[in-house]
Amino acid sequence: MAGRLPSLACRRIGAALLGAMLLAAPARAEDPPHAGDLQRLAEILGALSHLDTVCSGRAGSIWREKMSNFLQVEAPPPELRRRYIAAYNRANREFAALYRDCTPRAADLVQRYLDEGARLSRRLSTDK
Image 1 (tube, rainbow, N blue to C red):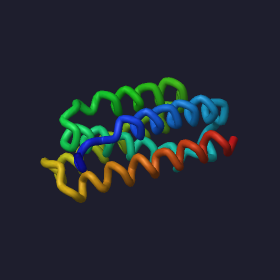
Image 2: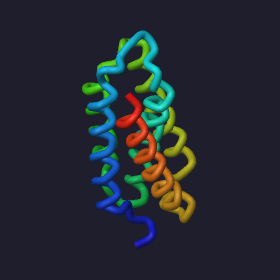
Image 3: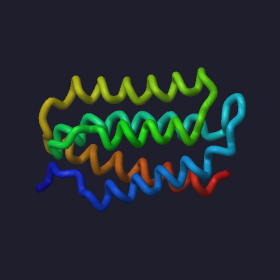
């Protein structure tokens, strides 16, 4: 079904996200060099949280859980943590306002965000 989130892709991005978070964790500083990539990853997780709900019928809890794990592993300073959470919430709200149903565009975005998230995760895990 075109609107379904591929479970293999979901598992792959989850594994890549976890790997990236574990490897990126030691890079903490006032403003980590990868803060922009990490913020984008938070946005992608927020978008997928909503899109997975409308396109697969599952609750977006898997993406909320990944965001929670991301924050726990990354352990950013308070201001950076607020920015990551705001990015996640903003993306979730914006996609909820735009997509109430799984349109072909929404299904396409799911795949594009899974791909982008996987690329970001790989880059974060190799760029220390």
